[in-house]
Image (tube, helix red, strand yellow):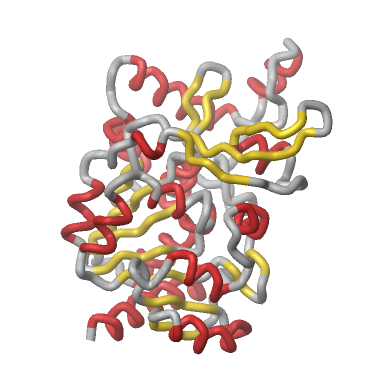
Length: 319
């Protein structure tokens, strides 16, 4: 079975680990979000790609869900001693090494897709990890600053420094409209037996991947089941602050609203949590097959069961 998964960071990575457990024989291609990428200290940082790579390769900080296990922060402390920021984005010493290698390779002319493949040669994540594009895309958020008025900030500043504490008026994947899918992305979609949307952020993770011209169209035209798992449980995000960016694009923070946001022209099946079973009829009325199952990734077994339910729904849709 050939499976394509569109993935953000923590939620996508943990779902992938469950998927690999549920179908260990599957050929899995992951299309990773690069809209969260940021340049810091002269280095190219790819948080979502690295979170997938570290999680599946056994190097993730399990409690945080991001960054390296057994991390130290000597470089960060030295930079702070020099007064060099930003201090709000915490890169660890081990993590710095990844970004140094990536930046050196890209400076030598290698595209991000080739660099990602080279980094994965060390980590052996067990999936084919592709960036959504080799082109530079950065998600920006429009906010009101008490001193500067309305302005755009990088998504990382909004998410990490501000903790999404101020309203977002718009979310813009800058550069996405001019980007091209990375090599292998469209081919993987065309050859897939099923496409999955894990419980990643529907606006700044999966939404940003779909904003790259050709990706949404390729998925819609692939002729295979497209199944998603709701990141909203009981009208609230399972993790993070997805409700803040959903509001910015005019979508309610409900499982049904997110399904309708993706739309029946893209999505064939949608899993909601048992607490949202009342939304099943609403989703199905929108032309999307829907089923209520446990959707909390409390442990590896629960996550594997979620993945199995997604694949089972895909087979129902196919039939």
